[in-house]
Length: 324
Image (cartoon, rainbow, N blue to C red):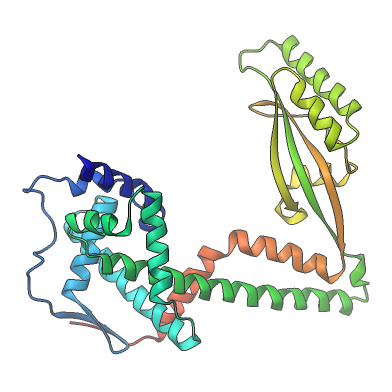
């Protein structure tokens, strides 16, 4: 029973790193379930990636992991495993070329953290994976490749941000505009929600809007205003935290710009009721710093996947990949 609980916990914990939906059921599959190959099968070289060999055993172990995590059939799991291993070899090779190396201690620490979130020790985690036919080395290799690639992608994004910042600033200067005229705002926000039932009558909806407007009229600072909001019936206060202007939706951006620090934005109807934002801090960032701040926020939020895909495609195009 303890092993069953451990296996179920792994399925939930490694969901992000494996894009898994259920590991437990597969690990507890009946003996007749079709899985890829035998662990005792002879290992042969299947692919060579820039003189780095991928063996049938490598593919089998990774495919088993993908089968357990993603409920793939043997054929698709083997194909996905081979493609993933090729990409990983290229990425780790690129990491070595750039001097990006993740130590064994760092990988072990990452896997230990995953095990701890599963309420397990590392040896328990390793045994639970082993029961499903997945060597811990297969899991560690995947984590190592992800850590190396994450550093490469972040470095590429940061380089692009610096280049684009310099280009934009130069464009401003070329147009004889003062770079210091460019501004952005850095906000500390609290979201105030006046709940409205979906079945509420028009009169009830209007009454809640009037109540929201009344709070807005009394609101003079976050310290006192938020205390007042929390004391009201069916009103929720949610900490939003720090937001740059580039991170704020266009509709809300104008509201924040036109609302003074320590005040509330106007009530806006939503599925929850009427929502307002308390501006607890508004700091204007000007000139080149504003350009950099805006680009940085946007890049970190949106570019990771796109950059990873582009860099991987470039590595594949330049690589010498031999299938056997």
